[in-house]
Each structure stands twice: as C-alpha cells, then as structure tokens.
Image 1 (cartoon, each protein chain N blue to C red):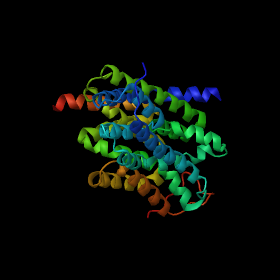
Image 2: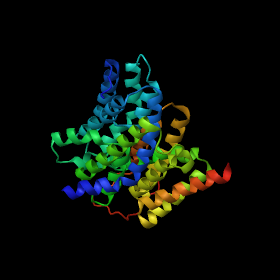
Image 3: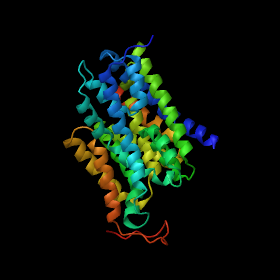
Image 4: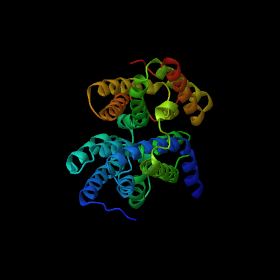
Length: 236
Length: 103
C-alpha cells in the first residue's frame, strides 16, 4: 500500500538526518578533490553506498585508479551480500522485476529500520522502498550542500553526530534481539568483529562478525518446528 | 550549466555501481536457494542481529568507557520504550557530554 511507503519514509527520518549531516562531509571532501556536482550526483545515484563513496572520493585523482577503486568498493560492500540475503523472507513471493527494481535503494540505514519493523510484523517491500527514497534524498541533499557551500554542520563530531549511527544501529540491533538463543551468536559476532577490526583493514569486520554469528547459531541445537518461544534452552 | 563528466569518471562510477548492485541483488537471489528449515534457517534468523551488532561494536569500543555507557543506555531505553529516536538521542547525549567533560 501507499501508506507503507510513507510509513517507511517517515520511520527513516531520524537516521536520514544524520545521513545528510555526514553526506555534507563527503561533499566537502569531494569539492577538494575536484568532483563536480554532476560527478557526485551520478555517484550518489549509481553507487548509493556511503562508506564506499568516501573511499572512492578519497582515491579520486587526475588518473582514476578504476580497477583498484572497484576492488575497494567490492570489499567494503561485501556486507550487502548478507544484507540482501537477509531480505529474502521480506521479498518472498515477489516478482523478479520487483526485486531488481527495489534492491538498488537498499542502504544500511533503511535495511536496519526495515528489519526492526519486520520483527513487529509490519514491514513490507514498500516500507523498505520508502525508507530507501528518504535516505537517498537526504544523502543527495547533504552531499550536494557540502559540495556547494561547505558542510551543513562544520564539526559533526562536536555534536556527537558521528555517534548517531552507532546509537541508532545499537537501538535497531536491540530491536532485533530474539532472546536467549541470540546470546551465543551475538557474543561470537562481537568478538570476531573486534578481532577483525583490529587486524584487518577496511570493513571486513562486519562480514566476519555477521557470518560468525550466523554460523554460531547454526551450531546450536536445532529447534523442532513445534518448540515454543519460551522453552528452556539447553546449556551448551 | 552542465559540467563535463570525463570518461574515466563514468567508467569508475559504473564499475563501482555494478559491483555494489550485484552484491545487493545477488544476496537476495541467492537467499531463495537457501533451505528454509533446520540449522541453516537458524543461522539466517540470527544473521541480521549479528550483522548489525558486528557493525556497531568497534565504534562503541573505540569511544571507550563512555561508548559502552552510551550504548548501554541506548539499549535499555530501546528495550523499555521501543522508541528508536529517544534511544538514539540519549546515547548521543552521553557522548556529547562525555566529550565536553573529558577534553
């Protein structure tokens, strides 16, 4: 329904506001690297992935290292493979065309908001899409504002805006917590993420933590379909 | 006025876009082939939470003890109120205050 689109869009407003503030930082960097507003707008529309775009702008120069850039983007965005896979249930029964069309506007932010909403049983592909459009509009406004006239907020750190993402993703993660059975996977995910973050460059830690958590959950005793939510979890 | 976009830039952006989009759609299309029951399903159910937790934990730890306090407050507020915005704002407020106090 149309209502779901608007619900998704408005549910993403708080996080999209932080996206705009951070986008303005990218815009400022892009201006220093000599990107035009059209370069940036093309990148926003075609790539639409914050951290990857930061790295692309950082690597921007007279002779673009096209292949290195693509490889860096691959490594940073590898998590989208898992993000995409986790959206399977939401898209079940949808046409291929719907999937092809809607998957482009899936960012960390609207994905996380949608997963939290799905726990309540009220998420839909339109909710996801509405969020994607909201995040996209704020991302474009923020980055272009930064490019044209400096940042929307000149020192985001001063206002703890850099922590906005951590705080909101923490809140959304808590919303996804499935109870006791999630404790071992989350501990594994957290530990692996910290280790990977310390020893590996880039964004490997997200994928390693996420996959590690999922594998830990697979190793737990399989639940029979008849088992109830509140059942006693055997100590492992 | 429309600025000139050079061929290299178009190539770089196109390649990055193809990589990103293939990952997004690829993950979704692959998931249709996953088993829907048993251990694999248990893993997939735990994936979104684990992924999000893995995403935030290094930034929490990087913020030190105050990061843990802020994230803890955010988590408690979220559990009690289910209000994402309130939970976010309070977590940020802790960091905002801590940065002013500790500098």
